[in-house]
Image (cartoon, rainbow, N blue to C red; front, side, top):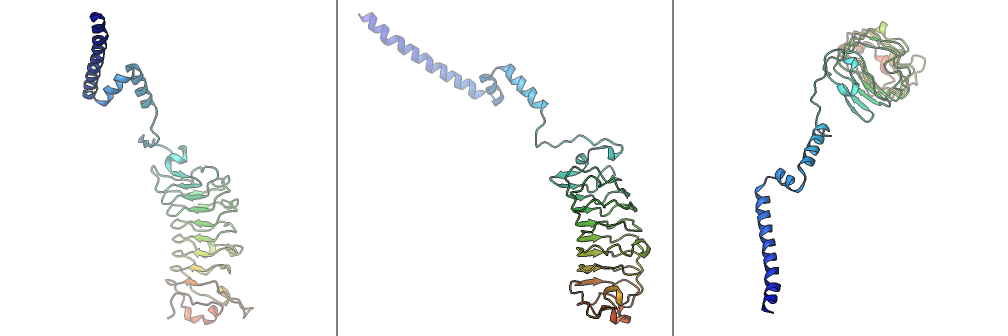
Length: 285
């Protein structure tokens, strides 16, 4: 009977003591291992190798692609590799290697900023398929030629900047433009058609400063800001801004006209500004 009681008490106690000892030893071992060895303790080593290989094979979503852009013709590279493409917008500014033509744009592009590159020409095919464009900024390129009809399909285009290029004449412009900038080009009056802006009834801002214009082109009634400074304009007349056959004609929307830096002496033509609420900025004596 004593032997039976001894067995019933002692054996469970020995089992419990052994379990506590194993737990203590396990904690000491795990505590002394680095994290990756600890992972190896709870997972099969082959599984770890497989997962590491998989991680190396898959690129991280936020990791930048440092692979160099191959040399050669930049037009052969995908646009969004050279430029920043966001939803509806493409930013191609100071692209390296040199961008010499308008890049192929993603469908449904609404805003294109391709400033300070070396684009030389705009052809009819450049924007033929991108009828969703609302703004094009090609400031600071080397554009000397734009084919007629290059913008003809852009019925939604509202803002166009061709500033700081080498244009000697203007193409046909979209009728719905609200802002047109051709500052710092080589434009002469013969390079601007007489009706170039006549049908642009929504035009608000017209910038033609720092060119070689000899006369003021036809200015739509909708224009509010007109920049013609630093040209070769030598005279104005009553039909330049007003109408000789309509003494009641007024242009209340025209709030800023800059003609400084031109040879014309504006005080010689006092009747030329009677329809305006402000006098042009320029030389009066």
